[in-house]
Image (cartoon, rainbow, N blue to C red; front, top):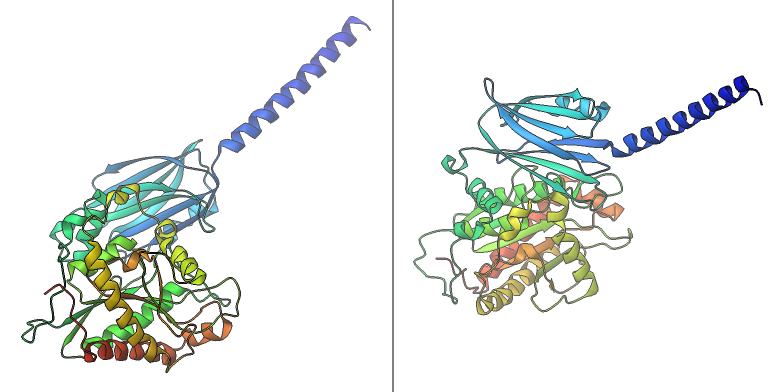
Length: 417
């Protein structure tokens, strides 16, 4: 081989090696980039949530700017794509906290999100691991900075929950039952809890009916019926499409000194055959059936799906007394039976007795609490019924009839006088 041929071979070899090196660097670089697959914005009166979903964990930095007030979030290792570009169009004019949003490629490895604000906010940013079909998520919750000045118990409870001090906002449980007084100076208070909400859609039917929407409509109908009763007052854990942690739902019932707690759902099963209405109460000693345990596990996963920051996990149910809980469960079973009997007049029953399992949302130690599965949204026929105003109204009326029957049967009022 001549010298010129040898030099040419070396150049080709180096060129090929260089190409291979560039290819490997390119592959490494691509692997390090997080692909954003979805951006969702959930505005509500209590707080607005922005969720950025990606195939990998996103590193981020946040800071504030003034004149005008803005929240800036830098996403590291992210390239601008059509999903991110569409975020601005998701900002609604009636969002209480965000005026507008824009996104741009700040530098080759950083996407900058800028939220122009309508009021002073306290941001809570945290990451969520993949669960229930969701990939890695970066969650941005925007709370009002002056939450304590707002006359909304839910805002105060959410603030305490995020600090890990939720029990400071909740009245202590009484040590035993107190019979209802003839001279009771307040109406019977009923807390209605439409399941799921916001980032957590709940179950979804074959024709894309979302559980969180249907149960909110039923709860609103029931709220309107209760408000017409001269001796009753109704509150709702949520009255909009917002995610509320399970423990905050319970705490709101305690804060409002509720006499009854009714959680409203429309669940799904792995097949489309199961149908009928069901009622559940709490069990501290295991579920009464495999199906009840399965249902409790899926409902208790709401916090993982809807997304709560780790700070909220510091709240412990140390106010719960076993004796009070046992008495309350007995009352819950009586209450549940009264509601189940009335539900049977508007829909077939999946089970003829009240079942029990460890539902986190039913754990108020001194408030009789039930979870009503109005129908199976996974059953095509029942999904169709759940969408109709007629069936929603019938379910609401049957629950109210059960509430009245429970008290007419000599039930003890809740131990929060």
